[in-house]
Amino acid sequence: MEGKGVCFLPMLTSGGGDMVKGELWHKVHIHYRLKESKKAIARALV
Image (cartoon, rainbow, N blue to C red):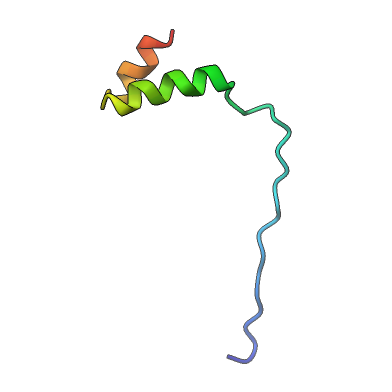
């Protein structure tokens, strides 16, 4: 194993800009538990 170095990926810090609000997350997971499709969940949340 000589000559093989370990390469680490850069750590990304979360700025919170892409995070989902708790209330929306809860609504999505209610629909998900009901086995609804992604498309149906998206329509229900619009």
